[in-house]
Length: 383
Image 1: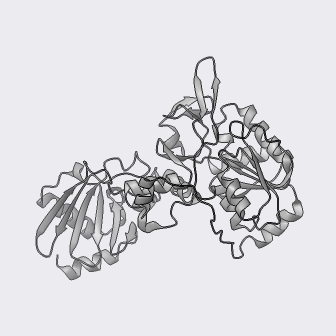
Image 2: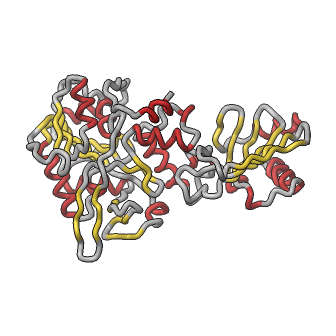
Image 3: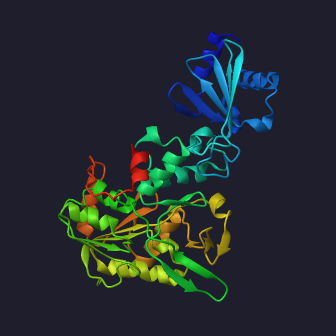
């Protein structure tokens, strides 16, 4: 096969993740490429004695006569798998270059794994939920700086999350409870954020944070959202069982119940939290919780109707439809999905009609004002 034939075959590939001048796809998706290209990729691997266990992603160079055999050994297990080895074959000059990353502290990682596989792959829906989770958290705003482990971890931290067993987790308070069989740390420490939480971003996106509404943050943690809202001149207050227990809970136009119910291991207490938050709502309640597929949930130790994470925290993962049903059955009101794991519940029905009529119009862009101080090391890494 010559360069022209190779380039012609590459152009027929419609599956995979396209990044710059290369297309990446998992070996499980080879059924969706031409047999001629598939056979050629396997032929080169065999000719160079590249063991099948040493690669699972192929990088098709669209502007050069090259193939790169990439090994992500935990492609299915890790939400953002790390590259262990790459073998780049220059077919024009008949050379190969091998790079090892096992000892690297800042290894390249993958995102949007659903793009690497076919839609009928059993992991596809789980990969979709991982990507949607990151998008809702605002982690993909600058795709140029997320390709390496340290940068990705820093962005996760700056947005107020941490990875717990491969999924994004935002805690809001510290409270230990005892069960007859298990002691669970309901929350670890409240997370420091450099931007609005995803449910607050949804309110901002639909122009509810324009200063016309009062806001109550039910489970506000360290209060980073409140500081940002106050900097914009918004009348906002928050209550938290650990960090702001002295604050009285009183009615406001908008109430945010963000990532609270998913860390409550007692179903009746979850129901009570939703009902209490709705009672405080005069116009709109936003409820957010963690979303995950069955493949991810099965990795953990079951506990009641959820799981116990490696941090010894309880986590109730929902599917999108399950969360919607839980909210609607609890409140006997419509829950409108505005993002993965984020729902609006309107008490003001006129407001609901206006929202539904205008939700497709141009959205408001929030301009962050406040930031948390960083130490000298973090400042250096941010440069």
